[in-house]
Amino acid sequence: MNSALAVFFAALPLVVVGLLLVGFLWPAARVMPIAWVSAVVIGYTVWGVPPVWLLAATVEGVITAMQILFIVFAALVLLYTMLRSGAFDTLNRSFADISEDRRVQVVLVAFFLATFIEGAAGFGTPAAVVAPLLLALGFPALAAVVAALIGHVIAVTYGAVGTPIIVGIGEPMSSVSSIRATIEADGATTTEFAIEVARWAATYHLLVGFVMPLFAVGMVVYFFGGEERSLEPAWEVAPLCLFSGIAFGIPYWLSARISAEFPALLGSMIGGAVVVAALRAGYFEPETRWEFPPEEEWPDHWVGTIRPADARGVIPSEYAISPMRAWTPYVLLVGLLVVTRSVDPIAQFLRGETVELLGTTVSLAIGTINTSVGEITIGPFGFQWTSILGTGLQNGIGVAYLPGTWLLISALIAIPLFGMSTAQVAEAWREASRNLRSPLVALVFVLAMAHVMLQSGAHAENVDSMIVVLARATAGIVGPVYPFVAAFVGALGAAVVGSNTVSNITFGPFQFVAAENVGVPRTLIVGAQAVGGAIGNLIAIHNVVAALATVGLVGQEGRVMRLNLLPLAYYATGVGLLSLLFCYVLFASMF
Image 1 (spheres, helix red, strand yellow):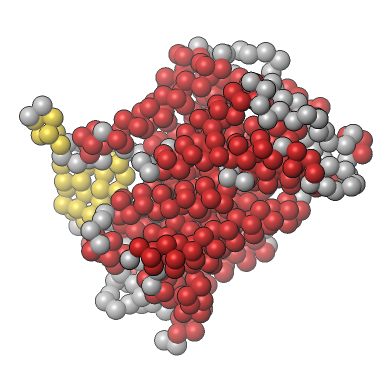
Image 2 (cartoon, one colour):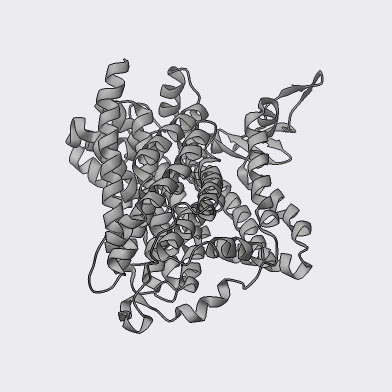
């Protein structure tokens, strides 16, 4: 096939997604099945993929979607347990009580609280939870949404307890045989490769993202400070903002050296505690209080159907649960994750591997069943399907090791801890289930599409998949400056599909192959992808719509996306320059 024609067809499923989702504003649940059908048709007619391989790739994608949906469901159960018990009200109040200065509130609520929620739940939850809280504090609805979206972006790479790395990077690298073979030839496993990617992503984030509290404050005071726009009020709190970025960034970067589950959680919890202590001790408190213009002077596009006065009930007048008790489920979650990740015998056992315990060999695997559709290893908490439908593809679910298990355990422990009634518990689980319905169809089909594209060359030798064709074409066009554009590719992917995890699954192998073709370190480029997928959330239509809906401002998507192009351009450019520096200066001097 003509190479230009091959690139056109390889890109067509992604063009369908972009055109229908962003251009025509169709809902994702309607767009993604169409995109999957387009990938299947192109795979069959252009790539010559046999139907059984197309079905196997689809099954592989659905299994990956099941892993993500389990983690998201568990995260939502814990979040709504906190909300229904009143524990989250305590967290809200503890931040709101510290300062009445709007700039300080941006740092504490839009940055620290939003990054914490991202680390615990992810998938669009932070902006949807934090925006109405800021509205209740007295922020214009538009300012609340912009601040919430900007504030949490540094944590997105490790959102939902590391899902964008654990599933988004580790899973596709393992499922694509040629990539897995390359990683193993370098003496590493795909899990070790994903951890190394997480480390480099944290390095990018630390060096570029530590200024995001200042960026969020600057956006609020400049665009929502009245007719005379000025950044001077932001510079007055620059010491607080930079201190907050560093207080978050240090534990964030250090914990990424261990595992992808911890950075967002530990960065927000430790950093937030340090900054709150400093403010309570009298440090960094601004000399003058900054406030928005009087509400009657606000332009119509600043406010929606919910006014600040209507949202005041979000913040309780007193604590129903003590702050220490309110934080306990998340402290417990971090402890459980540390033990199950850092203690090798426990980690191996939970992954389904055979371990020696007190002189006895034990394993979670019950047995293996050989069937006409492949070999299935079954355990009490999951399965591994080898050679799906007789192809060379494989995938599985190990529920015991997934973060979702420990999120659910933390939620169950929270029930007696907070003295919740049966009705409160039932409502929390119902709300978690309701909020899972919306992304379910979209997530299943977008991952099915991604895996069809990834595996479209697996059925025969010397056949490049759609993703490989796109990666080589892009690397050939961009050439040696490819490291600069890697983050932009990830951002575009997340903006289109609405998820860092899905962007990583789709474009992670793309970046891997492009790095090989350009001749630069793969971990650096895939790390830039992981960061790009995070910053793409700033303009992801799903996140923007969800956040606007919580403050009654649906219809202002274009305005929010235009404003958020500023931090996106800064972040992606900064990561691009660092990527060039690391690839051609740091690694060139080391090797």
